[in-house]
Image 1 (cartoon, rainbow, N blue to C red):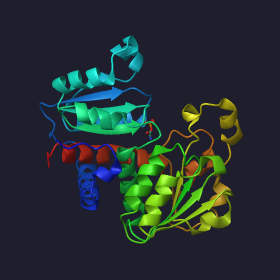
Image 2: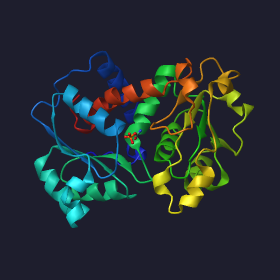
Image 3: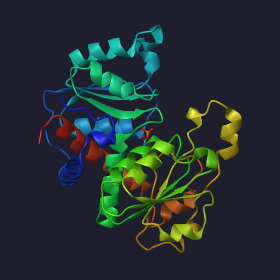
Length: 301
Ligand code: CP
């Protein structure tokens, strides 16, 4: 069986195949490839976009969905282990999409499950389906995944989306990464090491300044309040960078602002009317990309 737990589980050829399939689903979203199949959607942590875009994708593919959006409504609250939940649900469904607050939970589920597992986010670790929709958004707006200057801004320590995106973009030609984060929320050492091993340039900044004029993509992230054990530490960094429309004046004409959403304050609402804002379109791309991911993992196309 094929799982998608970490973005590094897929090869560059598979990334490109997903991009091709997503473009096909964007042209023709309603394809009955999942007819007669049941998808389990297990969300042990809150979600709006990931869960609803998966559900939309499954509906557009003609499949049926079982599952829960609120772990409090599952027997996990009675003390049932993830092992037992997954073993049982994998007998009900043909594939499982799951989100869990613990890093490594999706990998563990894949070891226990008899059907494919798609990781819809595990703690601060990985969010591979987000990355594939981010790549599709980058490809659509830039026309290429090569030779791009990617700025990642905000909570790079706990932000699972930037961890997966860094790894994925590192397989393309000549990426440059610029990390803008307070010192306490910088990109973890392991991900920087991933770039160093491949001879990929990266720069770290604490100031959110004119340097964004060099960006092709400005990838904003929310400070992940739920991952802080100390609320005082969160208060110190919560609104540290706020992108507003005036700051985009001297940026490249084709730069695009991405954000996995939800945003809190890190993108001022005046950016929404800028042609450089792309985050709502990015969220729509999630439907086509998730149709593509399910089709690829289940070998339907
Ligand atoms: N981008 C993302 O994962 O959003 P949700 O938490 O709403 O699913």
